[in-house]
Structures are given as structure tokens and as C-alpha cells.
Length: 195
Image (cartoon, rainbow, N blue to C red; front, side, top):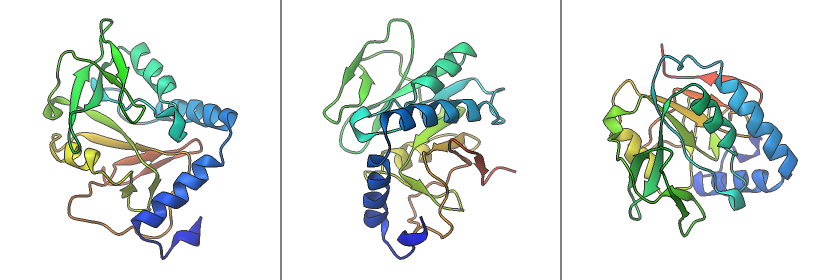
């Protein structure tokens, strides 16, 4: 995938969306299961409050339902995001009473519930399109997660989930970009900023 060496972020987004389009339903399912299982190897299981995104199926995102089931099985407090406007997220505790509704982008979101402040969250699983060898990610370009992660506590563990391998060149980084501590694909775990 080194062909995108000289591409800007918009080109990287286009390239990775194309990569994802090339995946079959069974590849998406198998890789998603492998990613969830790989997450069991992360040094995070002593943490309690974990934030996870729900997948946009028509964008061929990682199916996080497998990871969600794993978190529930380990009795973690699970937090789900909701877009409040064009730039911000709210975060709600997942309970048996949580009702979901798909937004205009096809993302399942909590209708309401117990709101959780970012400063209380221990671990965030982050959606991305691609990531580089420094743990920098390229997302959809709206900045929702960069703004959210900026408000998380300093020791919050940030984990990018990807169907693909890291790029061996550095992405262009903006002041608002927040690097990952780990990135996980179906083959391995990449470790970055944590000591």
C-alpha cells in the first residue's frame, strides 16, 4: 500500500475507502472477529469504562458487535457516542434500557440515557481509515474524534481499529490530530505512545 506515499489526506481517504470496498462480507466478518480476539491481548483489561463506536454497515466498517460482546462479557462499563451537531459527540452509558436510532449517516446512536463525561473514560476504540507508523490516523475528516479525544483524561488509552496494516511513511499531522496508543488489525497489534 506504499502507492499513497505522496497523497494528501483526502487522497488517503479515497484510497482506503476503495480498499474497504474491495472486501467481501465474509472478509469483513472474519477480520472483525479476529480484531476483537486480538484486542484480548491488549494491556487494558484492568480498566473499566470503555468507549466503542457502532459500525456504519454501508461504509464497510469493522463490525464492532464482536468487540462489544467481548466487553459485555467482561462486565465493562460501555460508552456509546452520539453526534450532537456537525462537530461534537455526546457519550452515553450502554444499559439494558438503551434505545438506538440510526442517524442520517446510518450510524446507530443512543436516543438518550446516562451521559458520561470524556474525562471519566479509560479506553477509547477509535474508527479510522488508515494509520501510519507513528500511530497517526486518517478518519473521515470531520474531526469528531480529535475534538473528543482532546477532552479525555491524559492517561486514556486510544486504540485504532483497522482492516489494514500501518503505512510506512508519516501522515501529514495537524495540531488537532491525536495519535493512537495502539492500532489493531486482524493480524497484529501496533504499539505507539504508551511506555
